[in-house]
Image (tube, rainbow, N blue to C red; front, side, top):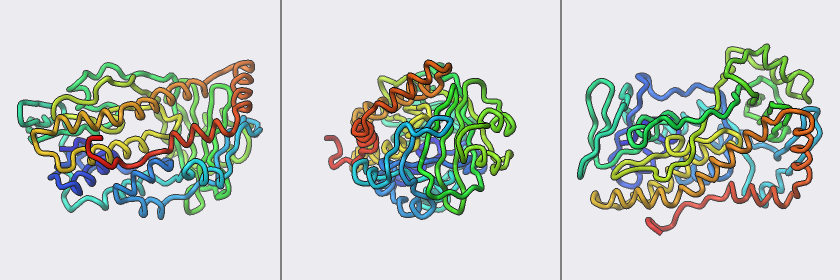
Length: 377
Protein backbone atom coordinates (compact mmCIF):
# COMPACT_ATOMS: atom_id res chain seq x y z
CA UNK A 1 0.00 0.00 0.00
CA UNK A 2 1.17 3.50 -0.89
CA UNK A 3 -0.60 6.29 1.01
CA UNK A 4 -0.66 9.49 -1.02
CA UNK A 5 -0.88 9.99 -4.80
CA UNK A 6 1.31 13.04 -5.15
CA UNK A 7 4.63 12.94 -7.03
CA UNK A 8 6.34 10.76 -4.40
CA UNK A 9 3.48 8.26 -4.21
CA UNK A 10 2.93 8.03 -7.98
CA UNK A 11 6.63 7.48 -8.64
CA UNK A 12 6.90 4.87 -5.89
CA UNK A 13 3.81 3.00 -7.09
CA UNK A 14 5.04 2.89 -10.69
CA UNK A 15 8.43 1.49 -9.68
CA UNK A 16 7.01 -1.09 -7.27
CA UNK A 17 4.65 -2.45 -9.93
CA UNK A 18 7.60 -2.76 -12.30
CA UNK A 19 9.44 -4.66 -9.55
CA UNK A 20 6.62 -7.22 -9.49
CA UNK A 21 4.60 -6.04 -6.49
CA UNK A 22 0.83 -5.62 -6.37
CA UNK A 23 0.25 -2.00 -5.38
CA UNK A 24 -2.76 -0.31 -3.82
CA UNK A 25 -2.48 3.47 -4.09
CA UNK A 26 -4.63 5.34 -1.54
CA UNK A 27 -5.43 9.04 -1.98
CA UNK A 28 -7.40 11.13 0.52
CA UNK A 29 -8.89 13.58 -2.01
CA UNK A 30 -12.15 12.33 -3.49
CA UNK A 31 -11.20 13.58 -6.95
CA UNK A 32 -7.62 12.30 -6.79
CA UNK A 33 -4.44 14.12 -5.82
CA UNK A 34 -4.71 17.72 -6.90
CA UNK A 35 -2.61 18.79 -9.86
CA UNK A 36 -2.99 22.48 -9.11
CA UNK A 37 -0.21 24.67 -7.81
CA UNK A 38 2.22 26.63 -9.92
CA UNK A 39 5.46 25.10 -11.13
CA UNK A 40 8.66 23.56 -9.84
CA UNK A 41 12.26 22.99 -10.82
CA UNK A 42 13.83 19.57 -11.20
CA UNK A 43 17.60 19.30 -10.99
CA UNK A 44 19.86 16.68 -12.63
CA UNK A 45 19.48 14.14 -9.81
CA UNK A 46 15.70 14.21 -10.32
CA UNK A 47 16.11 13.66 -14.06
CA UNK A 48 18.36 10.66 -13.36
CA UNK A 49 15.70 9.22 -11.04
CA UNK A 50 12.97 9.94 -13.58
CA UNK A 51 14.87 7.88 -16.16
CA UNK A 52 14.51 4.90 -13.83
CA UNK A 53 10.88 5.78 -13.07
CA UNK A 54 10.06 6.00 -16.78
CA UNK A 55 8.91 9.63 -16.94
CA UNK A 56 12.08 11.47 -17.98
CA UNK A 57 11.15 11.82 -21.66
CA UNK A 58 7.69 13.22 -20.84
CA UNK A 59 9.16 15.64 -18.31
CA UNK A 60 11.83 16.86 -20.72
CA UNK A 61 9.19 17.44 -23.38
CA UNK A 62 7.08 19.57 -21.02
CA UNK A 63 9.88 21.55 -19.32
CA UNK A 64 12.42 24.21 -20.19
CA UNK A 65 16.14 24.07 -19.36
CA UNK A 66 17.62 26.96 -17.43
CA UNK A 67 20.54 28.62 -19.23
CA UNK A 68 22.92 28.79 -16.30
CA UNK A 69 22.55 29.63 -12.63
CA UNK A 70 22.96 33.10 -11.09
CA UNK A 71 22.94 34.67 -7.63
CA UNK A 72 22.28 38.42 -7.56
CA UNK A 73 21.60 41.35 -5.27
CA UNK A 74 18.31 43.23 -5.37
CA UNK A 75 19.96 45.90 -7.51
CA UNK A 76 21.10 43.30 -10.02
CA UNK A 77 24.79 42.93 -9.16
CA UNK A 78 25.96 39.39 -9.92
CA UNK A 79 27.30 37.59 -6.85
CA UNK A 80 27.95 34.31 -8.65
CA UNK A 81 27.19 32.90 -12.08
CA UNK A 82 27.69 29.47 -13.60
CA UNK A 83 27.29 29.28 -17.37
CA UNK A 84 25.17 26.46 -18.82
CA UNK A 85 28.23 24.86 -20.42
CA UNK A 86 29.95 24.67 -17.03
CA UNK A 87 26.88 23.17 -15.41
CA UNK A 88 26.48 20.58 -18.17
CA UNK A 89 30.15 19.61 -18.16
CA UNK A 90 30.90 19.73 -14.43
CA UNK A 91 27.63 19.63 -12.47
CA UNK A 92 25.72 16.97 -14.37
CA UNK A 93 23.33 19.39 -16.08
CA UNK A 94 21.09 22.37 -15.40
CA UNK A 95 17.69 22.67 -13.81
CA UNK A 96 14.47 22.23 -15.78
CA UNK A 97 11.25 24.00 -14.76
CA UNK A 98 7.74 22.80 -15.61
CA UNK A 99 4.18 23.35 -14.40
CA UNK A 100 3.22 20.99 -11.59
CA UNK A 101 0.16 19.86 -13.56
CA UNK A 102 2.47 18.58 -16.31
CA UNK A 103 4.65 16.66 -13.86
CA UNK A 104 1.55 15.04 -12.36
CA UNK A 105 0.28 14.12 -15.83
CA UNK A 106 3.58 12.45 -16.70
CA UNK A 107 3.49 10.38 -13.49
CA UNK A 108 -0.20 9.52 -13.77
CA UNK A 109 0.41 8.20 -17.29
CA UNK A 110 2.51 5.44 -15.69
CA UNK A 111 -0.42 4.15 -13.62
CA UNK A 112 -2.88 1.52 -14.88
CA UNK A 113 -6.56 2.34 -15.15
CA UNK A 114 -8.20 2.55 -11.73
CA UNK A 115 -4.88 2.40 -9.90
CA UNK A 116 -5.74 5.18 -7.45
CA UNK A 117 -8.42 4.65 -4.79
CA UNK A 118 -9.68 8.20 -4.22
CA UNK A 119 -11.38 9.40 -1.07
CA UNK A 120 -9.38 6.91 1.01
CA UNK A 121 -8.10 9.15 3.80
CA UNK A 122 -5.64 7.34 6.00
CA UNK A 123 -5.90 8.31 9.67
CA UNK A 124 -3.77 5.63 11.28
CA UNK A 125 -1.82 2.40 10.95
CA UNK A 126 -2.37 -1.02 12.50
CA UNK A 127 0.52 -3.45 12.41
CA UNK A 128 0.77 -7.07 13.55
CA UNK A 129 3.07 -9.98 12.61
CA UNK A 130 2.77 -10.68 8.89
CA UNK A 131 0.36 -7.85 8.02
CA UNK A 132 -0.14 -4.11 8.21
CA UNK A 133 -3.30 -2.07 7.62
CA UNK A 134 -4.06 1.52 6.70
CA UNK A 135 -6.97 2.72 8.88
CA UNK A 136 -9.34 4.97 6.94
CA UNK A 137 -11.45 7.90 8.06
CA UNK A 138 -14.66 6.14 7.02
CA UNK A 139 -13.98 3.32 9.49
CA UNK A 140 -12.66 0.88 6.89
CA UNK A 141 -9.14 -0.39 6.47
CA UNK A 142 -6.89 -1.70 3.72
CA UNK A 143 -4.52 -4.53 4.59
CA UNK A 144 -1.29 -5.61 2.93
CA UNK A 145 2.26 -6.85 3.42
CA UNK A 146 3.84 -3.39 3.67
CA UNK A 147 2.74 0.23 3.86
CA UNK A 148 4.55 3.26 2.47
CA UNK A 149 3.67 6.73 3.70
CA UNK A 150 3.95 9.20 0.82
CA UNK A 151 1.43 11.59 2.32
CA UNK A 152 3.49 14.74 2.63
CA UNK A 153 4.76 17.01 5.35
CA UNK A 154 1.68 16.46 7.55
CA UNK A 155 1.83 12.69 7.04
CA UNK A 156 -0.65 10.67 9.08
CA UNK A 157 1.52 7.59 8.57
CA UNK A 158 4.49 9.40 10.11
CA UNK A 159 2.30 10.61 12.97
CA UNK A 160 1.10 7.04 13.63
CA UNK A 161 4.71 5.90 13.92
CA UNK A 162 6.47 8.80 15.59
CA UNK A 163 3.89 11.42 16.58
CA UNK A 164 3.13 14.58 14.64
CA UNK A 165 4.13 17.36 17.02
CA UNK A 166 7.57 18.16 15.56
CA UNK A 167 6.54 20.48 12.71
CA UNK A 168 9.02 23.36 12.77
CA UNK A 169 8.06 26.84 11.47
CA UNK A 170 10.94 28.43 9.56
CA UNK A 171 9.80 32.03 10.13
CA UNK A 172 9.10 32.98 6.52
CA UNK A 173 6.57 32.43 3.75
CA UNK A 174 6.89 31.75 0.03
CA UNK A 175 4.66 33.07 -2.73
CA UNK A 176 4.74 31.28 -6.08
CA UNK A 177 3.34 32.13 -9.48
CA UNK A 178 3.64 31.76 -13.24
CA UNK A 179 3.97 34.90 -15.34
CA UNK A 180 3.17 35.33 -19.01
CA UNK A 181 6.54 36.92 -19.54
CA UNK A 182 8.94 35.48 -22.12
CA UNK A 183 12.67 35.53 -21.43
CA UNK A 184 14.02 32.09 -22.45
CA UNK A 185 17.64 33.25 -22.16
CA UNK A 186 17.23 34.17 -18.49
CA UNK A 187 19.23 31.84 -16.23
CA UNK A 188 17.82 30.15 -13.20
CA UNK A 189 18.38 32.90 -10.67
CA UNK A 190 18.05 33.70 -7.00
CA UNK A 191 18.10 37.33 -5.92
CA UNK A 192 18.89 38.16 -2.29
CA UNK A 193 17.65 41.24 -0.46
CA UNK A 194 17.02 42.26 3.14
CA UNK A 195 14.75 39.55 4.52
CA UNK A 196 13.53 38.73 1.02
CA UNK A 197 14.48 36.49 -1.90
CA UNK A 198 13.19 36.17 -5.45
CA UNK A 199 13.73 33.22 -7.77
CA UNK A 200 13.15 33.09 -11.54
CA UNK A 201 13.08 30.11 -13.91
CA UNK A 202 12.07 30.05 -17.60
CA UNK A 203 9.13 27.85 -18.57
CA UNK A 204 7.93 26.64 -21.98
CA UNK A 205 5.44 28.66 -24.04
CA UNK A 206 6.66 32.12 -23.15
CA UNK A 207 6.18 31.93 -19.39
CA UNK A 208 8.34 32.21 -16.28
CA UNK A 209 8.03 30.48 -12.93
CA UNK A 210 8.87 32.65 -9.95
CA UNK A 211 8.89 32.46 -6.18
CA UNK A 212 9.23 35.17 -3.57
CA UNK A 213 10.33 34.43 0.01
CA UNK A 214 9.78 37.00 2.71
CA UNK A 215 9.93 37.14 6.48
CA UNK A 216 6.55 36.99 8.18
CA UNK A 217 3.21 35.26 7.77
CA UNK A 218 1.65 33.56 4.78
CA UNK A 219 -0.73 36.42 4.02
CA UNK A 220 0.45 38.34 0.98
CA UNK A 221 -1.55 39.85 -1.88
CA UNK A 222 -0.34 40.70 -5.37
CA UNK A 223 -0.18 44.36 -4.30
CA UNK A 224 1.96 43.36 -1.29
CA UNK A 225 4.43 41.55 -3.55
CA UNK A 226 4.60 44.36 -6.09
CA UNK A 227 5.27 46.85 -3.29
CA UNK A 228 7.90 44.73 -1.53
CA UNK A 229 9.80 43.92 -4.72
CA UNK A 230 9.42 47.29 -6.41
CA UNK A 231 12.81 48.66 -7.36
CA UNK A 232 14.39 45.22 -7.63
CA UNK A 233 16.30 44.48 -10.80
CA UNK A 234 14.60 43.62 -14.10
CA UNK A 235 12.63 41.61 -14.94
CA UNK A 236 11.24 41.08 -11.41
CA UNK A 237 8.72 43.98 -11.39
CA UNK A 238 7.58 43.10 -14.92
CA UNK A 239 7.19 39.42 -13.98
CA UNK A 240 4.94 40.32 -11.04
CA UNK A 241 2.84 42.60 -13.26
CA UNK A 242 2.48 39.79 -15.81
CA UNK A 243 1.09 37.35 -13.20
CA UNK A 244 -2.62 36.85 -12.64
CA UNK A 245 -3.18 37.51 -8.89
CA UNK A 246 -5.65 34.60 -8.79
CA UNK A 247 -2.84 32.21 -9.74
CA UNK A 248 -0.50 33.20 -6.89
CA UNK A 249 -0.17 30.74 -3.99
CA UNK A 250 1.32 31.68 -0.62
CA UNK A 251 2.39 29.20 2.05
CA UNK A 252 4.17 29.45 5.37
CA UNK A 253 7.37 27.39 5.29
CA UNK A 254 7.85 24.51 7.72
CA UNK A 255 10.22 21.60 7.98
CA UNK A 256 11.02 18.90 10.53
CA UNK A 257 14.19 17.83 12.25
CA UNK A 258 15.64 14.64 10.74
CA UNK A 259 14.31 11.36 12.10
CA UNK A 260 16.60 8.67 13.46
CA UNK A 261 14.40 6.05 11.80
CA UNK A 262 12.03 6.22 8.81
CA UNK A 263 9.84 3.29 9.74
CA UNK A 264 8.91 0.36 11.93
CA UNK A 265 8.39 -3.23 10.86
CA UNK A 266 6.65 -3.26 7.48
CA UNK A 267 5.99 0.52 7.37
CA UNK A 268 8.28 3.17 5.91
CA UNK A 269 8.16 6.73 4.59
CA UNK A 270 9.16 8.50 1.35
CA UNK A 271 9.46 12.11 0.29
CA UNK A 272 8.18 14.88 2.54
CA UNK A 273 6.67 12.33 4.90
CA UNK A 274 10.21 11.17 5.71
CA UNK A 275 12.32 14.31 5.33
CA UNK A 276 10.36 17.54 4.73
CA UNK A 277 12.72 20.36 3.86
CA UNK A 278 12.55 24.11 3.41
CA UNK A 279 12.50 25.00 -0.32
CA UNK A 280 15.80 26.89 -0.32
CA UNK A 281 17.69 24.30 -2.42
CA UNK A 282 14.73 23.24 -4.58
CA UNK A 283 15.41 19.60 -3.72
CA UNK A 284 12.14 18.41 -2.14
CA UNK A 285 10.64 16.60 -5.13
CA UNK A 286 14.09 15.61 -6.38
CA UNK A 287 14.84 13.77 -3.14
CA UNK A 288 11.41 12.11 -3.21
CA UNK A 289 12.20 10.61 -6.62
CA UNK A 290 15.53 9.34 -5.30
CA UNK A 291 13.65 7.69 -2.42
CA UNK A 292 11.30 5.93 -4.84
CA UNK A 293 14.14 4.50 -6.93
CA UNK A 294 16.12 3.19 -3.96
CA UNK A 295 13.05 1.79 -2.18
CA UNK A 296 11.88 -0.13 -5.25
CA UNK A 297 15.36 -1.52 -5.76
CA UNK A 298 15.60 -2.73 -2.19
CA UNK A 299 12.17 -4.39 -2.39
CA UNK A 300 12.65 -6.06 -5.78
CA UNK A 301 12.46 -9.83 -5.38
CA UNK A 302 12.16 -9.71 -1.58
CA UNK A 303 9.99 -12.36 0.06
CA UNK A 304 7.38 -11.32 2.63
CA UNK A 305 9.47 -12.26 5.66
CA UNK A 306 12.31 -10.07 4.43
CA UNK A 307 10.26 -6.89 3.95
CA UNK A 308 11.33 -5.20 7.24
CA UNK A 309 14.99 -5.84 6.40
CA UNK A 310 14.55 -4.41 2.91
CA UNK A 311 12.89 -1.30 4.35
CA UNK A 312 15.74 -0.84 6.82
CA UNK A 313 18.25 -1.19 3.98
CA UNK A 314 16.38 1.47 1.99
CA UNK A 315 16.36 3.92 4.89
CA UNK A 316 20.02 3.27 5.67
CA UNK A 317 20.96 4.15 2.10
CA UNK A 318 18.85 7.28 1.91
CA UNK A 319 18.90 8.91 5.36
CA UNK A 320 22.32 10.53 5.23
CA UNK A 321 21.84 12.21 1.86
CA UNK A 322 18.24 13.28 2.44
CA UNK A 323 18.93 14.59 5.93
CA UNK A 324 21.91 16.61 4.68
CA UNK A 325 19.54 18.35 2.25
CA UNK A 326 17.10 19.08 5.10
CA UNK A 327 19.82 20.67 7.22
CA UNK A 328 21.36 22.66 4.36
CA UNK A 329 17.95 23.87 3.18
CA UNK A 330 17.04 25.01 6.69
CA UNK A 331 20.17 27.10 7.09
CA UNK A 332 20.13 28.44 3.53
CA UNK A 333 16.57 29.62 4.12
CA UNK A 334 17.63 31.40 7.29
CA UNK A 335 20.60 32.98 5.52
CA UNK A 336 18.26 34.35 2.87
CA UNK A 337 16.20 36.06 5.56
CA UNK A 338 19.07 38.10 6.99
CA UNK A 339 18.12 41.75 7.44
CA UNK A 340 20.04 44.95 8.02
CA UNK A 341 22.69 46.53 5.78
CA UNK A 342 25.70 45.12 7.64
CA UNK A 343 24.47 41.53 7.77
CA UNK A 344 23.41 41.62 4.11
CA UNK A 345 26.78 43.08 3.10
CA UNK A 346 28.57 40.31 4.98
CA UNK A 347 26.37 37.65 3.37
CA UNK A 348 26.85 39.04 -0.12
CA UNK A 349 30.58 39.40 0.43
CA UNK A 350 30.90 35.78 1.52
CA UNK A 351 29.04 34.62 -1.58
CA UNK A 352 31.22 36.76 -3.87
CA UNK A 353 34.37 35.45 -2.21
CA UNK A 354 33.39 31.79 -2.62
CA UNK A 355 35.52 30.32 -5.44
CA UNK A 356 33.59 28.99 -8.41
CA UNK A 357 35.27 25.62 -7.89
CA UNK A 358 33.70 25.36 -4.44
CA UNK A 359 30.24 26.15 -5.83
CA UNK A 360 30.71 23.62 -8.63
CA UNK A 361 31.80 20.99 -6.11
CA UNK A 362 28.74 21.61 -3.94
CA UNK A 363 26.39 21.32 -6.91
CA UNK A 364 28.13 18.17 -8.16
CA UNK A 365 27.53 16.54 -4.78
CA UNK A 366 23.93 17.75 -4.66
CA UNK A 367 23.13 16.58 -8.19
CA UNK A 368 25.00 13.26 -8.00
CA UNK A 369 22.59 10.36 -7.93
CA UNK A 370 23.07 6.94 -9.43
CA UNK A 371 20.44 4.21 -9.14
CA UNK A 372 21.74 1.40 -6.90
CA UNK A 373 23.21 -1.69 -8.52
CA UNK A 374 22.48 -4.20 -5.75
CA UNK A 375 19.46 -4.73 -3.52
CA UNK A 376 21.22 -4.46 -0.18
CA UNK A 377 24.76 -3.29 -0.83
